[in-house]
Each structure stands twice: as structure tokens, then as C-alpha cells.
Image (cartoon, rainbow, N blue to C red; front, side, top):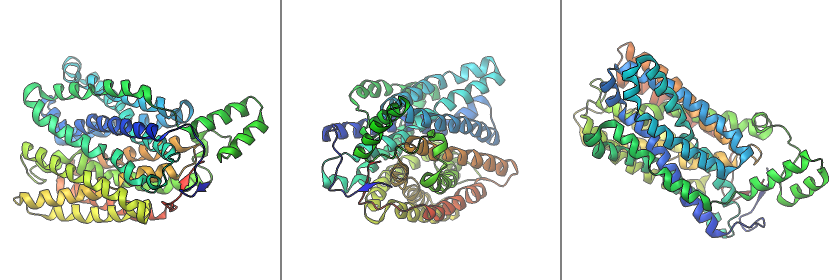
Length: 454
């Protein structure tokens, strides 16, 4: 791994204002992508009621949607490693917007052709995987942009700054829950999805000012030289910018080789396990909270719980971003997820009638579940070289959806067997979260005081 201390920087035409602009655009792009992504889970009980699905049927459909999301989220990684980070961000935003608009048509299509309508729903929500992939693209892009920040003080708090970008998850989740609360009585779930597509117009317009990351530009230039047979020039340029030109395999192959392999297995495995918990407690949170065999809370009250707890999760992002800059991102992630498992276990055991206690414990759970992702995505970006950074980040990111697929199948089977939401969330939420917190410690630790330039 090629690293330099924070006081040493590679010459670049990227200015501090370019980094600031990129940071804000990535924050809003991720926020609006999450808005659409989480909206489907929040409205799933209402879609199920409108379309006549049972609880087991709705989670089964969500599992198929998750499978499509995983395929799309992974497929975009190798593409971004070839076309660039900037174009990848714009593609992800546009894909999420199209998915929102088409989702609003689901009820009409299902009404005309029941079976084909469900296939249409799965395909449309799979396209939303482009929005989910936004965080992996952001991680690769901002990791490279922050490496060229000329301010040593800011370089030392890169994790905290990135946590503000990644906090788009709780912000988007709060917007999603708030929009359901305000828009659902006016125009039903269809209006909620139509409104979710509108912010993409702003991001696509603002994206004109995004600069491509210097690391990708340099690597792309080196690859072009190698293809043209200009090996000596490529070697000189690689030495100048600290880029290893010996790796000529495609990113999809390289991500399973050398230093990338350990990161792929450990971080990807932890991400996969943790997403069983994300599915149980975040994506399907309204189902767990409102089900009679769950916490038996009224739907409107459940939305209030989601708003409060996701606001708390925002603080969790900042805390884990700050903590990762001090004790290392890997350590911050592991400690956070272990505390998350403890919080959710206690919440499941709490009496259903004790609303304040449920809110407090659910909020604590999301604080330690979602918060570490601010450190995780940046940690993922700095664990892969530029040649495989977007592919590796996307593979890790997509592994979360694989975990959600597994979790969906297991939760569906548990509910179909009549065990109820409490048991389902315990076995396929709490325990996998605890396992993910332990597994992440097997990943290679990265000194937060170093800046990766390759």
C-alpha cells in the first residue's frame, strides 16, 4: 500500500473549493437516493394492504426486490472503474429518480396484469439499486478527492467530514418517514414516490460542476498509454503519482487478488451479516413495530419512532466518523455494531406498552447500527487501490443486499412458520449484527493519520 503522511500531498489541479463542492453534491445525492430506497420499506405495509398481500408475501416480494438491487448495485462498480466517478454519480441519481416515478405506476400495472405487474414491481425496484450504489461511488470518489486536500488539518478529520456525507442515510430516512406522514393522507403511496423523484433534477444540474478525481484520471491515462504500447511513459507517470501499473487485470478479477482479497472477504462478509440487521430493524422497521406479534405500535406512532430514531442515527454518523479519525475506522465500526446488538436485544425484550423505553432503545440501536456506516464506507474506499476501488466498494456494498436477501428469506420463513416478529428479529437481526461486529476486526487496520494516493 502506498501512503503518505498528512503533511505531504500530490500535486493536483483539484482546489479546496472543488472538494467542498463535491462533498455537498455527494451528500445531497446520497440523501435523495436513500429517500427513495427507504421509502419502499416504509410504505410496504400500505402497499401490502392496497394490493392484498399477507405479511409473508410482502417480505417475499421485498426479497426479490433486494436480489435485483444487489445485481444492479454490483454491476455499476466495474463500470465506474472504467467511465469515471463523476459519470457514475450522475447515473446513480438518474436511476433512482426513474425508479421512483415508475414505482408510482405499480398499483395501476398490477391491477391490469397481476402476475406481470409483480414482475414489473421487482424490475422497477431493482433499478433503485443504482440509488443504493450511490454510497459506494461516493466512497470511492471522495476518498480520492480528500487525498488531494491541501489543508493538513482537514486531512486529519477526513472521517468526520465524510460522516456528514454518509449521514444522508438518516436524513433521507427522516425525509421518507416525514413525507409519508404528510403526503400519504393527500395522495396515497403513489404521490410519495412521485415527489421522491423531483430532487434528482437539482443533482443532475449541480453535477455539471463536479470534477473527476485526479487518481482516476491518472490511472485512466496510464491504462490508455499501456494499451497504446507506451509502457515507459506509463511507468514514469505511475511513479510520479504513486500508482502501481503492474496490475493489468480487469478490476473484477483484481478485486479477488492480493491485498484486495482480504478486504473483499472481511469487509464484504461483515457488511453482508450486518445487512440482515439493517433489513430487520431499518428497512422493515415499520413492519416490526406495527405487527401484533412485534411491538404492536400504531402505524402513525411507528412513523414517529422512525423519525426520532433516525434523527438520533444522524448523531451516530458524526460520532463514529469522529471516533474513526481517532481510534481507527475498523475499531469504531466493530465497537459500534457490538453495542447495537445489545441495544436491539434489550428493545425486543421491553414491554410493548412502554413506548418511551422502546423509542429510547430503538434509537440507541440505530445510533450504533447506522452510525458506523460513515466509517465503514470510507474505510472500504481506503482499503482498495484505485484500480479496484469502485469495484471493491460496489462489491462490498452489494454484499449488503445479498445479506438482505438471506435475511428476507429467513424472516419470511420464520413468519410463515408462525414464530412472530420478535423471534424473527432476534435470530435474523440481533445475532447477525453481533457477528458482523466481531468479523470486521479481521480486516486490515488502516492508520487514520495516513492518506492513500495509489
